[in-house]
Image (tube, rainbow, N blue to C red; front, side):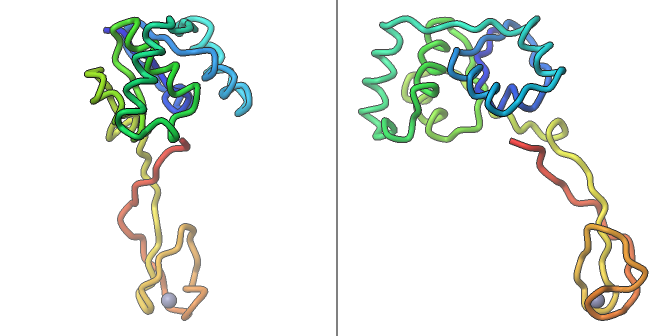
Length: 160
Ligand SMILES: [Zn+2]
């Protein structure tokens, strides 16, 4: 399966199976964020950077005007959609406007935030007196002085 990845998808550093591609605008966005060696390696070896054709661009433009998403989509967003059309690829994105356009264009998409991949467990500490939870351990609750106990781990989202 072919996948077109948006900037958020690539920034997870996650390994996506299949043939991967993205557009030049995403690459520029990633360079603004600063590339980790891991991401650089993924880009060098696994991701093709391609520009979509004019015909696909035109289909995306027309569709975005019909759904009212035109103003919420950046030129890079449009290129991602057009490239996915060109390649017959699945678009990997969490952006609702892009997903909306995918539905209009009959283009398959998948969200990035798959449970168990982007989620991480973090322990928290709950006060036995006032019930406040703290992200770090204290001998006594900084608010009321009661002892803390370890609470259930909470789920934290990875960086977008
Ligand atoms: Zn307390």
